[in-house]
Image (cartoon, rainbow, N blue to C red):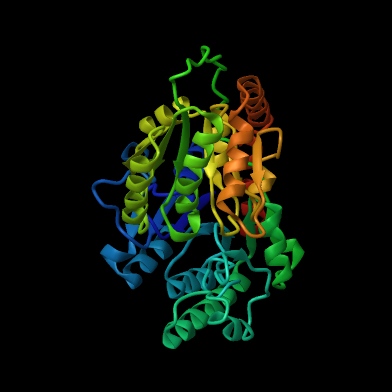
Length: 403
């Protein structure tokens, strides 16, 4: 089968792009022909979603232009197009009109005026509204976005257009029941919305029992992902000193990733380390696959402090392969892989608070035997997942769409 993938980013800058970088080589190994269209080009400091050795045709809209890329796609004659994370709705619209298209949901494309499904006043809180004209009435009072009425109108029109694009796609793929229900609530027919088995990129790594931790050895926490306002990094930075005092033990926190909030979080981190002697914090920036393996091997606990309803949270499965339990707020699709008390702890999310996050982290770390149990449970959970089952489910949808 000839499968073309259309996505916004050419770099593995987040969980959804890392997922693509692992999915596409496996589809090619299974005998499919693959092509890739990206809306943006990759910068030199970022890891590409596709290694060059795969020799997969790739076209960039930013480099070649809208019409030239559409011509290349027509000439390539895909049996099906996988549309993931588009940014330019006009291009996505043209693709869905021209080719049999499957949409893989990684965000609230066409179902939220801001795309975050979160109201920010008086505190950030997941929103359950159905997208429509009434969202315009809530945009300013609930601080769904900024205070510019023109921006509000532009975002509304874009998401309304995105909603029409969804209805042109022949199938929608989700990884969580949360997102499956989101599209069903928005009127997408049930026979076109498919929830896939959880993907695991590699076999679960062999268990390595950690030596007894000395009194002076810090617990190692990890934030891995894009540094956006609703990713909760500021709450994590405020929670770490509370945990360090409760444990009477040092804590090291690694931030791996980048984004618009990085400078602000770095400033807050300097304040935290200056006021709390037992806390050290390092910002690593974007890291490649080798460094990701390293930080995951070293981590005691992954923290996913997102205050918006994460559609899924790929990083949780990546950590699970290494036996790293997780803590996160009970929002979106996170509770579907973060099993409270088994693979980590869920913090209350109505509303999400610093103290709630700190308590959940403390519950995982205060007893070394309990932490070892969580690590074993997390490996057991990951071992039950199968990339083959995930690929088979995708292929079945592609065959159905391609006829």
